Amino acid sequence: MINWVVDGSFTVDMVLTFFSCYQDQETELIDDRSKITKNYLTGWFFIDFMSVFPFDIMVMEGSDYTGLVRVFRISKIYKIVKIARLVRLFKVFKQR
Picture 1 (tube, rainbow, N blue to C red):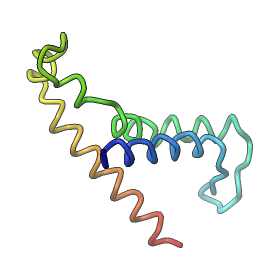
Picture 2: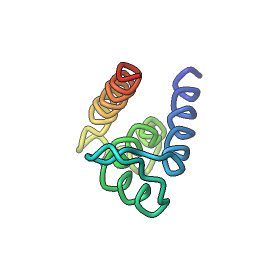
Picture 3: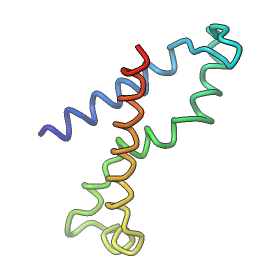
């Protein structure tokens, strides 16, 4: 249950990131939606997406993807991505 709540909050964060301004390297505030989208998609989007993708459902017995998942050991990658996501959140809160 807790895992679903965390995944839900990460998903909401992903959606909000598409609407949030960011600072470029010259500390200029960027509020153009196309630049925000491009920046996010080329940056943290893949890690964020991997952290909320329901690998645990794919790993369940009887799933058509069980063999494939076991071969690639996606469950371990899933945990690493979640940890990377949490590290990113801690860095963001530390800067504020």
